[in-house]
Image 1 (spheres, one colour):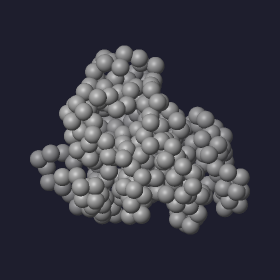
Image 2 (image 1 turned 90 degrees about the vertical axis):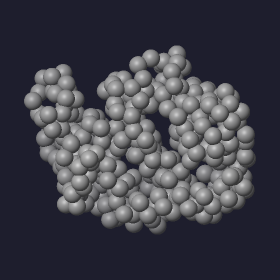
Image 3 (image 1 turned 90 degrees about the horizontal axis):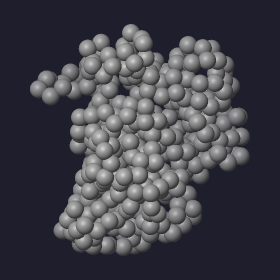
Image 4 (image 1 turned 120 degrees about the horizontal axis):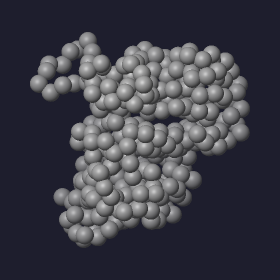
Length: 364
């Protein structure tokens, strides 16, 4: 794993981590995070490797398949290996539910440990640090998605209806950010069968779908590893096929503004559609000049990626924490895909902001 955190942070950020944190030696098989437990520290892995294990029920057929392949009877699967430069404990800032995951040191590790309360205070008070930290976290989440789905391959997961992107994005942005987007964005009518983004090609803008429908499809070129993300989620077994539909409230092209990686799929209008586009030079200039906006933008992208990762984890995780249709909810159980009150409140605010934007743009 590339040392993303250290590459993205500046010298003053690293000085603060050294001053605030404490180096700790972690012996092999020591748990950094235990399933179902809360934790109080944020860890930056400096040396060694750790393993993230997802708990499984014995009657889960996918768990049996992995156990057979790995020659073990342990009711859990290794979902990723964390090496130097990786982080543990960022879940508090990304809304990612890790209660079914255990992280264990695979070998002797050296970590920098920081109290979560100190990290939260730093992120709230230092917007420059927040922008750089959330950007690095977004890159790490993209890499985790890539690694996990490359490992699992194109398995046929149950199709689910994702939360609209705008509910994650608008929940983090300020009203002034939306004012800026309206003032600097362009309303574009996209005719049916028009290709908005081509797999592996340049991304000219960030797009917000205001009306209509788009199709996401994989071309024949399989060299881009991120194609596995949607292919796995939708059970696609071959290239050149539609893997998802995008509707009102979806964001298109956001990952190219994180680390410049090329789009993983082609996006084409299924019907006449309307989008609000933010030209690449305009958005990049805003991210560079307005550090508060950058912090909020990258945090929103991290939460969006965390939601995608959570969707995959939830399909593999322990059944006792996952709601089963037809059964009553238990107030004493925290379900793996359960949204907390704060997240629900943010989503409600985001929906209101989106309706307000549509009204401002005079979109029926």
